[in-house]
Image 1 (cartoon, rainbow, N blue to C red):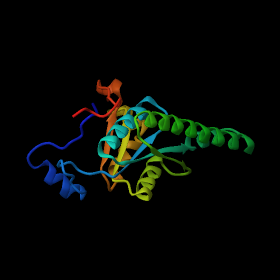
Image 2 (spheres, rainbow, N blue to C red):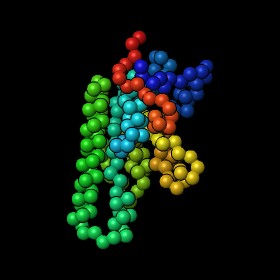
Image 3 (cartoon, rainbow, N blue to C red):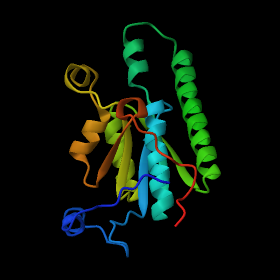
Image 4 (tube, rainbow, N blue to C red):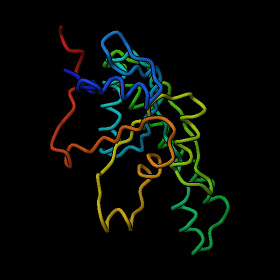
Length: 196
């Protein structure tokens, strides 16, 4: 059975419709026709992808899967060393190839569940990954952004920063943060649709 993300409560649907300015479906659920999920190959991101996939299947929504080539760590490392231009080109090519492999894995997982996805690769050059996610969401007309998160708090969040937090703070569409199974203690079931 897919994780249920239905709104419950007497006034929740009316409140959600006003706040989100989204159409309400026949079952009283907010309708998301286009969902964006960002992946980076980590277990946390794949957990977010699994939830986004289940939601897309349940809602019959289009699912855009974004991999952002983040060159920031490479550029920071290169700033402290001398590197030949060929090395930079190989690193960039490697990051892009890794993204294609991750997206191909997502396509395979989605196909097994009976879902076609729209894979997208973009680059974060001189800007935060969160900005690329938000620009992609705007360009794709996404109605929901799904992100896997470690759920870090306190000093860990402060020292590491949080792309997810930046997306939540700046997004004009709803954002669903999905904690990794090791953090939340739950596993999504994406084996198939629930039997009614």
